[in-house]
Length: 156
Image (cartoon, rainbow, N blue to C red; front, side, top):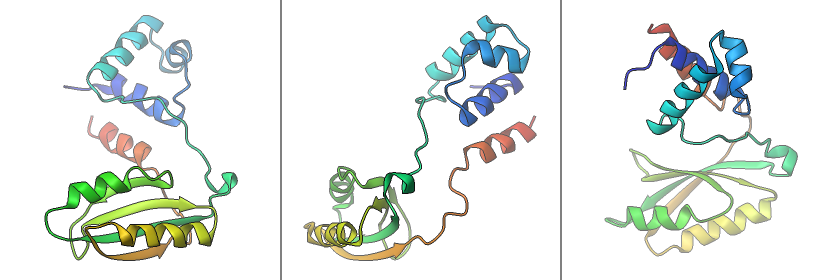
């Protein structure tokens, strides 16, 4: 699965704006529309491009309480707890982690009451031993997608 500079340029442009048409990509990168379409299809087939999505400003939608919740799970039931957690609408990410805790969850809430209710529900999950919740005060940098592409790009 060797990527060349053109593949990385296509990825770079699409990470910034996944709505770009093949015609616009062709214009920006100075190659034919057919080449762009073939490359994009190849990147999709390889699973490098998994989906085309949009980025929402959750605070503007009323979600003003972003939190990271660390969860300690009783032995052997990690996957079961992760499966339960991943079904909550407020949960954006569920991570296996090392250290004192087994799982870290990123979730957003509209009110302190919603957050409080969620934490109490999580603590009632059968195999959850303990939780540690951290309110995120400021998001300094969130998406590293473009940074990773720059890193790859510099490798060429």
